[in-house]
Image (tube, rainbow, N blue to C red):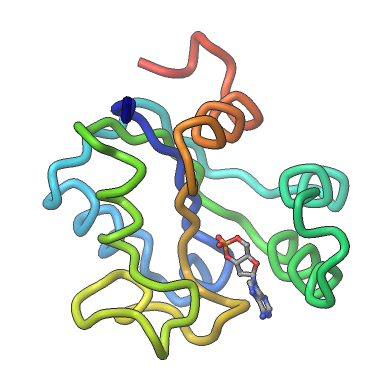
Length: 139
Ligand code: CMP
């Protein structure tokens, strides 16, 4: 059964380009409630651990470098069917393939620098939220 929480990051490209406010507005307008949020920067070790599943991929080094180059906004979001609905809201990984009106279509610049992260399963949403937040930081 689908749970009601997902995890997101507004990635360094979107932060650098001044899109934090617009992206949060899209998220809350779509009915997601922010139940945890922080402005932070990943260390190399953090990014390598968070993206460990991709470590054999050719873009892994580039991904770690990108995700550590500046601050991110990490958040836990609540809504019914959160994981699936949030992935619909953000659009395809590659912004060229993302549907009109999605966050990646609007704010991402490339497949690597794609503005936002969204968990791909309920299980990963829980793991990723726990990676960034202590229990007392989730409301
Ligand atoms: P996300 O789905 O949030 O998490 C994995 C990330 O790897 C993905 O976003 C992209 O930022 C990055 N990524 C996926 N595919 C590629 C690719 N072909 N080249 C560069 N980066 C990629």
